[in-house]
Amino acid sequence: MTPACQSLATAFAPSRTAGLEKLAQFLPRAGADYAKLRNYDYGAGRHHNVSGLSPYLRHRLICEDEVLAAVLGRHSLQAADKFVAEVFWRTYWKGWLELRPSIWDDYQNSLAQAINRVQGEAGLRRRWADACSANTGIDCFDAWAQELAETSYLHNHARMWFASIWIFTLQLPWQLGADFFLRHLIDGDPASNTLSWRWVAGLHTAGKHYVARADNIVKFTSHRFAPTGLATNPAPLQGPPAPARRTLAELTSPSPDAPSLFLLHEDDLSPGFALDQIGTPVATACLDLCADRSPLAPSPAVADWGRAAMQECVARWGTKLGPVTQGFCTPGDLANWAQRSGAVQIVTPYAPTGPVASFLAALSARSSLPVFQLRRGFDSRAWPHATHGFFRFREAIPNLLAAAQIPHH
Image (cartoon, rainbow, N blue to C red; front, side, top):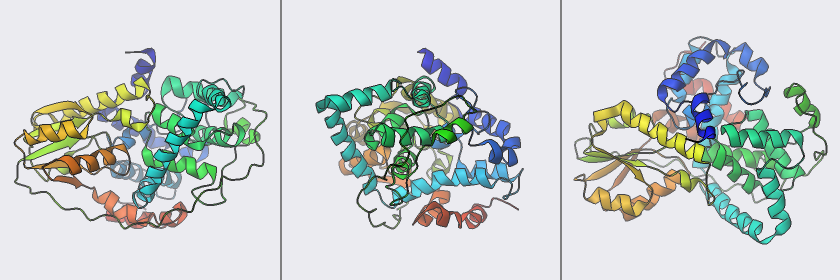
């Protein structure tokens, strides 16, 4: 294991137990302390003012509803408002993209074009390489690029500053920055990552962009940095309007008694809700799709962490998964294996828009067995509310908490 992988495993052990321990440690600070200190970036290894739960929520080693229930069991909704909102931002981004999946396709196409430009334009290639290798001369940006490479994590405020400097000061394509994050972040999520970069650029809400200010960086990094030369009054990027939203797809349920092949994937490593609907499968297949995050190579530390989290999930569920085969990365190989498995249907937790969803669509097209995705009630209730901006979505939070049977006061 590389030093980067060892450091990552120490800070964020890839297990549900580690996620629950972080949640327990954070609970006393989820109210007023979090609201007061959450915007401060104290640097690598010193992010004690935030929860550190994002890797576990991204892979659903722990789930949003259990985090919300724990926090609201200790704090009032008013006291924990800022943290509750952060949890629901993740839900909002997933819902927004799920209702407009062509945004993901457009991002992938424009990323491929940007990578082609990098290969053909020496000036762009040099600026992109300098940004990725922490060699821009902007003190805070270079520190964050190095922290990301070494720890696979950045504070959320640092991510916003980084993206703004990437787009408006360095004038690099936003798609290359979003790809840099998705390749290196342990909690890299297709929806949150893509849409957050679009929001900073001014593409999510037309005309509203996020501009990193030197004084803001000085304040919220406790004077660790004093950046100069930042763009001060850039125009937001221009782009086509958001596509019309679709309705959330209705799902067909699998037969509860039919022999099933179960699929585990990185988007949901708490499969109990799905296994409860089919019983013990005849076999389980584990997908290994980290490489599908990008046309470029993802960080080995991120890939190793994802595989370790998958193995932990397999160990945790044990015989309830049946015989387990790991490492599937192509739809064709999995379709051929499934046909020989003795199953008559394939069942898997729902994958929101992103690489896993694309894989499942390709598998459905190639497999002789029907593929059934099972979506959590939390998502089915929340995602349809992602129709406009977050603040309209936020109005639904009390009702969503009630529907999830999460007491709050």
